[in-house]
Amino acid sequence: MPNLPSHHHANQQQLRLILAALQDGVILIEPDQSISWANRSALRMHGVSSIADLGTTVSEYRKRFELRYRNRHRVPEGGYPMERVLTGETFDEVVVDVAPAGQNEAQWTHRIRSLVLNDAGGVPDCLVLILNDETERFDAEERFEATFAANPAPAVILRLSDHRYIKVNRGFLEMTGYDEGQVIGRSALEIDVLEGAARREFAIERLQQGRTIPQMEAVLQLPGGGERRAVVAGQPIEVGNTDCMLFTFVDLERHKLTEDALRQSEDSFAAALRLSPVPTFVLARSDLRVVMANNAFTREIGYPEGHLVGKGAIELGLWGDLVAGQEMERRLERDGRLRGADVSLRTRDGSRLDCVLSAEPVTVGGRACLLVLAQNVAEHRRSEAEVAAAIQAVMQDTAWFSHAVLTKLAQMKRPHAADGQAASGLGDLSARGRDVLALVCRGMPDAAIAHKLGIARNTVRNHVAALYRKTGVSGRAALVIWARERGFTGGPPRKTPMPTKD
Image 1 (tube, helix red, strand yellow):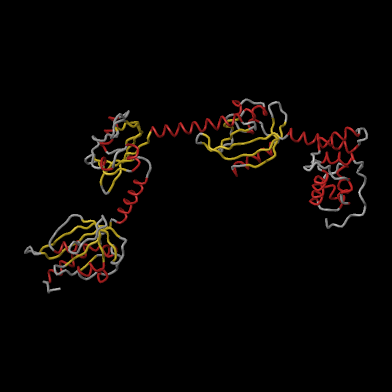
Image 2: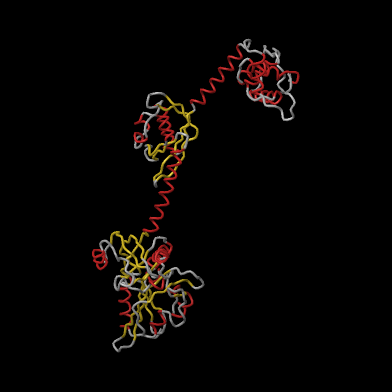
């Protein structure tokens, strides 16, 4: 640095004291290209702590930091703001991305202004760069750009100063059939998104004031002719320090098609529900109130659907056991589904209906619901009980059965062997098989047989299955008839248990 008058150093010192406290970054450059001073903000904007790290000259700065314009093109040699100010050029705003040399990704975005301080003779005495850190703002704008472009909802952005469109997303282009070049730069008069709006004058007034435009229906003119009805709304936003209006749209035609498809789907669901022979009803997921019920359920329960809809099971008094019903509802609220739960329902006439409930989550009309199947098992259980009683009666006394009747029953119950041969006789049975058959003929269930013979329950099942195979019958009643035909009385089994290797 050349020897300068003392008043020059004094002025520089005063200037530095003033600039040190500024939030903006400030770099002072001497006419000989040396960087004489930088405040803390300027150093922080470069990720360094001293001027030595920044570069003591403009040439060193260029070697340590790479600058790019916002279009990602590198700033060429001679185009760095420091180099431009050395030529005496002043500029109000230059925006550049800054990265340490060798790094491709920018770490900061600077908005730079220049200032040239002359001495009394008009000769440049000090060159000043004023830096603003715009990193967060530009990052936010990039995120907005990416979100705006990717958003499937149709949208355009209008600059308020001249009412020209500056951005358009793919959703708007697909809805209208415009190309991007046909929209960007066009005015609101050329592409009138408020045409045919129910409150057009009010919307235009809001647009001119830069205020929110509430939702309203409008008619968009398409580039190839024709119209498109849509709901449009406007929201004032700022894009790159420019006041704008963001217009968003809902395509009423597509919305109507979606609603029609949804309605058809729901109609199909309702039709299938009502035609189902299994008693079924739908509960709202939020409060477990009945939304709909099919004919099979209303027939079983005795109430018309209109009486059920909008009410809960407790309010309707449907639970045969209130405590068990409340527990069932807690499970539905917690898990949102149910599998084969035994429950008793109370019908309109006060009788009890034994059911097995199963529930699965479904969506009906956009509402979270539960589809509940209530299978009536009373008839099934009654049939089982009647069969068991009949077998028990047979076990007690079969003397009144004629041989002919027993033969007919056996023929009805026993399928013919594939090879046409008759089923095996008693002589083909093992000793343990005869023991099991004797207790079956006495009407004992598997568990009692296992206990009586001192063997496992699975072993009993295996012996019974073997008896079915050897005799060619299916079912315990047919097995009893088969044994009676052959004079097997089902007397008490041997008292000495067999070895347990079976």
